[in-house]
Amino acid sequence: MLFPKSSAEMIDVWQVMGLNGTGSDNYKVVDLFVPEEYTTWRDSQPDRVEPGPLYNIPLLTSYGIMFSGLTLGIARTMLEDFKELAVTKVGGGMSTVLRENAVIQSQVSQNEAKLRSSRAFLVEMIEEYWEAQCSGEPPSFDVRGRLRLAITWSMNQAQDVANFVFQACGTNAIFEANPFERRFRDIHTVLAQGQSHVSNYEPGGGVGWFSKNMKCPLFLPDVLAEIVVFTTHAVEARYDGCSVIGG
Image 1 (tube, rainbow, N blue to C red):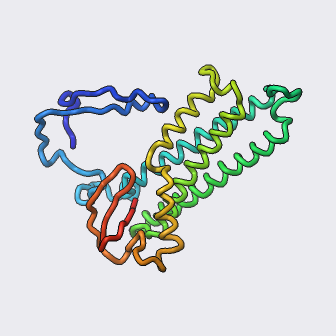
Image 2 (cartoon, rainbow, N blue to C red; image 1 turned 120 degrees about the vertical axis):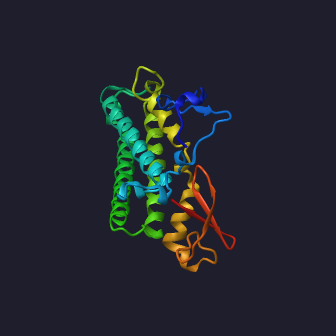
Image 3 (tube, one colour; image 1 turned 180 degrees about the horizontal axis):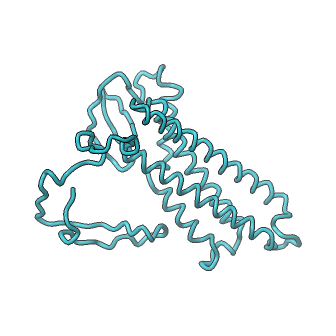
C-alpha cells in the first residue's frame, strides 16, 4: 500500500545488536483508507509495468541473493583484517606472531576455502537463475532449489568464517575501536533472517535428489497449487496435503 508518511506513526523498536543503521522500525496507522489504485503486491504480475527479468525475480529470492552477498562481504573483510593483525599480534604464551602459528595457518586456509567455494557456488547459481529469467521462461524447480541451497550455504559458511576470526583475534575482537566486533554483531544479525535457516536445505534436497521417488515431493511442477500462506521465510502452498516451498 502507498500512503503519505505523515499518515503513519513511527514506532522506534530497532534497538538491536547489529545492523543498527538499517533503522528497521515499525509503524502504525489508524482509520486510514487507501484507494485500490494505491495497493499492490510486489510480486503481483497483473500490476507490473516493467517486463524486464530483474523485476520478475520474486521478493524472497531477491532477499536471499542480497543477504548472502552481504554476509560473504562481511566475512571477507573480517578475514582480511585478521590476516593483517596476524602479522603483528603475538598470542598469549607464544613467542611468535600469529601468522607463524601452524594452527592459525591451517585455519586461515580452511576459512579461505569456505569463502571462495561458497562465493563461486553462489555466483554460478545466480548466473544460471538470471539466464533462465532472461529466456522468458520461469526458472525450473531444480534451478530454484539449487539457488536456495547456494544462498543458505554461503550465509552459514560466512558465519563460520566470522566466528573463527572473532575467536582467533582474542581480546582484539572485543574493542569497539577495532574492526571486528561490529562486523561480528552485524553478520549474526543478518543470519537471524529466515534466508539462512537450515530448513532451507529441505527444498534443495527434495528437488535435486529425491523428488522423483518421494510420495509427496516438495515441489510439484505439473500442478497448479493455490498459494494460501505468506510468511517471512517462504511462500507456502498446499496441494493434496503436500507442502510446497518456493521462492
